[in-house]
Amino acid sequence: MRHAHTVEQVRAAEADLMAKLPEGTLMQRAATGLAVAISNFLGYTYGARVVLLVGSGDNGGDALYAGQKLARRGAEVTAVLLSDKAHRAGVAALVAAGGRAGSPEEVGSVAAIAAADVVVDGIVGIGGRPGLKPEALATVKVATDHQVPIVAVDMPSGVDVDTGETPAEHVQATLTVTFGTHKICHFVDPAAAACGPVHLVDIGLELPPAPVASLQAADIRDLYPVPRGESDKYSRGVLGLMAGSSQYPGAAVIATSGALAGPIGMLRYVGPGKVADAVRAAHPEIVAGEGRVQAWAIGSGLGDELDIGKVRELLDAEEPALLDADGLKVLDESGDHTDVLITPHAGELSRLLGVERGVVEAERLRHAREAAERFDVTVLLKGSTTVIATPDGQVRVNTNATAWLATAGAGDVLAGLCGSLLAAGLTPLDAGSVGAYLHAAAARLAAADGPATAMQVAGKVAEATRLLLRRDHGDPR
Image (cartoon, rainbow, N blue to C red; front, side):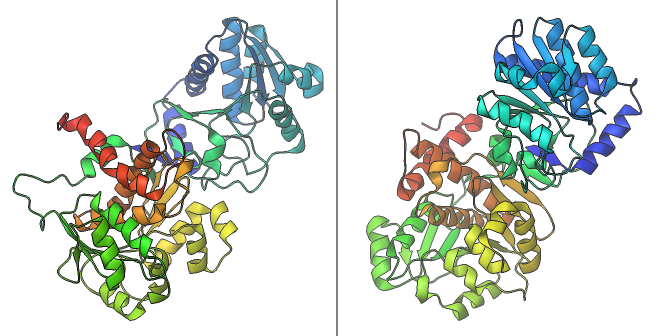
């Protein structure tokens, strides 16, 4: 599992460690890791033309000392000092190693950046505010205009570290090198999209529990409900699916496909007769009609046929439930919904919260948390980075999606799959986390050579699950 900590948590951990170490040790650890990462990124060091964009914070100091180490190995290093408070000892160390340092005018920053093999963004530290000052923005623009790759120190300067928001101009990094732990901006869009791949350098921090996490393959394997020798179709879980309508019959077929690709032993479909016929034609193993279930998945494609009273009765029952699409219309701020998982996209969440869609997209973490707290539900906010937030403040982010997943019906697959995981006994948080991961993994398989439809994604969920479980349990064939 990857963890992302807040600036306050990182600052406190750094202070604790620095009190135990000789002065400057922590910065040297970070600088060494940064220098190695830059060399690995380029594939060479000797003769490399490296430009450092240096502000007043510790990230600028990290960049300067990394530049010193690269210069000692034969790189041509130029530091563009964007503040008169740049780390003095770092500047002196770079110059002593043969590098250059000075104001943009003194070092000819435009020409140096245009000719560089890599630009290192050490403009703003993690405590900086979003946005860039004009002079800094001008140097970044030169790199962008000349398509010079940018390696960001800790995070792309100008993003909001603790929220993942990008309310102002910021760096678009090709690679981000961070220290001690991930920061929230590395996981949550839109800032995550500005980071590029993130390389973590261990500098020995002792950190408290993180407010945001991102599950990896091993975590998903540990959570996935694998049947045992004594399992039967009922103990594996029975899901009740209320989806589709005469207007949107395909939603029921697609959601059923997602659910059957999950761990359940049985699916009960509840819906119009003609839609049930279509579902049975595609999946003869389903049972049409109500009966005992372990969880409900409700809402995909219900349209005008949504029965609000019926759904509210189900929410008041003991079984956990998933609400998707039209099912979200029944949600209110009354009642105990802690066993409810909702799966909105940004537009649906904006309607729930009464704000513009663009605001939700710009502030994804903030609004997922707000909805979880207001409605007392677990919120799975779909997107390029899927944010899953609980009423008690836990947050997980899924980061392995492909842009090809932005296709009609993909959300229906996810709703069915997450419902299946709920019925198999996972909590709303774990069901959302495992479902989002496998959904994205299936999309990557389906879209390996280009576009994929929702049904193709559903058809790859079982394969994605087998590949995941095979790593621990051996080839089941």
